[in-house]
Image 1 (cartoon, one colour):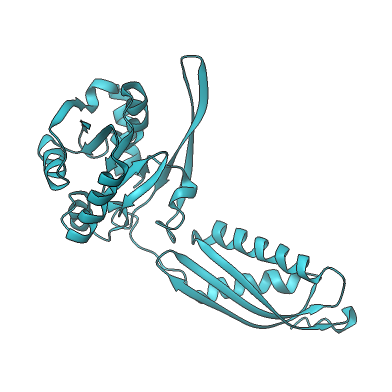
Image 2 (spheres, helix red, strand yellow):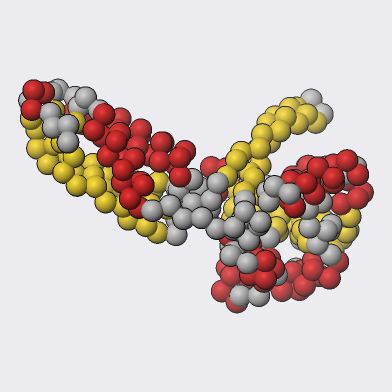
Length: 275
């Protein structure tokens, strides 16, 4: 296994540049902020960007928690990649990560200044320290469960190399330890949004009950309703499931694990309850 390092101060664009460097050097996997990343997805780990404080984020990035460290260590052994790129803010940091995960000595250490321009780093610094934005080098859909409740923006970049060209997607998140601080969204907001969508639907006669279940990976929305009697009750309920999940995810940033609609009964169209 060949191990490489990319080092640079916070906000210099390491995570943004990591995928391009991996392509250039044929590096298969990445260790970045507590995550083991490969095949364009998170293979194991906990993101430091989910921590409530800067100190907590640093501890996560250094794999100080034994369970976290062991999970990533075992996954590396299982995958057995030919190469790994370790990201860190200093030589001391990447050495600590390498030692903690029992990786071989570094083949090469790359400084961010070697692969970016001063202009690149100035833009990265502004994104980090003025706007509180952090890049994670995986597509947004891979982070829905990991970052449920965080506002995530996809960052699509068109890249060409050799005779091939493709879009590379990374993700931008705003951790709670950034200057923006934490935020909460009441279950009542989600219930009201689901109720609004259900009551506006022509196929729904009455909403009997709506509840929200919370978990670290997201939310489940449970709805009991009386539907209008017609030949497409099931397909109407399925359309409502998709609409509610899509709009709740867009408006709240929560990952919706399921929208469960229980049909309590059927009524004629003239009996639709608007309350």
